[in-house]
Structures are given as C-alpha cells and as structure tokens.
Image (cartoon, rainbow, N blue to C red; front, side):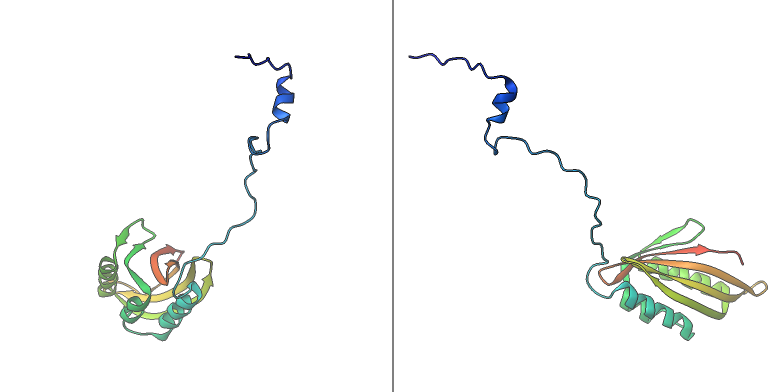
Amino acid sequence: MAKKKASKKPAAAKAATKSPAKRKAPKKAASLAPRPISSGKGATPAEIGAAVVAHLNSGAASDAPLWDRYWSSAVESVEGSGSVWSGRKAMQAKCAEFMSQHDILACRATGPFVGATGFAVHLEIDLKPKQGDAMQLKEIAVYTVKNGKVVREEFMYGSC
C-alpha cells in the first residue's frame, strides 16, 4: 500500500482550493429594510374605526350591535387606572357598571386615527355621576385589530 504524501501547501492555499460548496458563506448583516405588517383578514382598522366613530357620535343607546360585529369574544379592555378586563362578558359588565353610575349627556368622537394594526379615537364625554356634578371626560381610546375584530381596547385619560 502506498503512503499519501503530506501536502506542503500553506493552510490559506488549501482553503482557496476548496470547492465553493464547502466554503462558508459570509454572514449577512441584519436587514434594515422594513417588513410588512397588517391586522390580518377581515374588516380593516379603518373600517372598524369609522364604524366606532359614527356609532359614538350617533347617540345610540346600546353598543351591543357594534360589539357583536367587531369585538372579539377574547377582547381585553384596559383602563387608565391600570385595571384590565379579559373577555367580552367582563368588558360588557364593566361598561354596564359605569353606565349605572353615570348619565351620559353628550359624546363627541374624533377620528379614527388609523395605523397598520389598529386605530385610535379622541373622545370628549359630558357626563353626570348619579351622585355629583356634571363633568367632562377626555380620553384617547386605542384599539388593536386582528383578523377583523378588536382584540384590545385601552383608554388613556386626559385632564378634565
């Protein structure tokens, strides 16, 4: 049996003679280009936002038709106080409790201010607590939309 001769090529020369398939490709730098994002299939944030603003400005007594059409059964409702209600039944109970303690005198909604995955609405609500003086509540409501349904609503309060 014949012995193999030891190669006298330097390591750099050996690496240069490897086939392209055996060479490691240089690592790519992270892409700085944006990637697309959306709210998924179904009604868009713009469509839902327009419906919410129209509903709030209509003076309708019930939110149920809007919720039935556009709110997820697993929605999260977050108040500026730091409390969160999980699920539509809990959100509806929160709303019913608020309405039982206040008379809504007027509501003005501006917007929607639409983004890729949701929308925001500016609200000015004139209300009178059952036990107290009339006041104005200002807030921004931010809604996250996924596959045509609101999956999160968050209310941020301003000064009154």
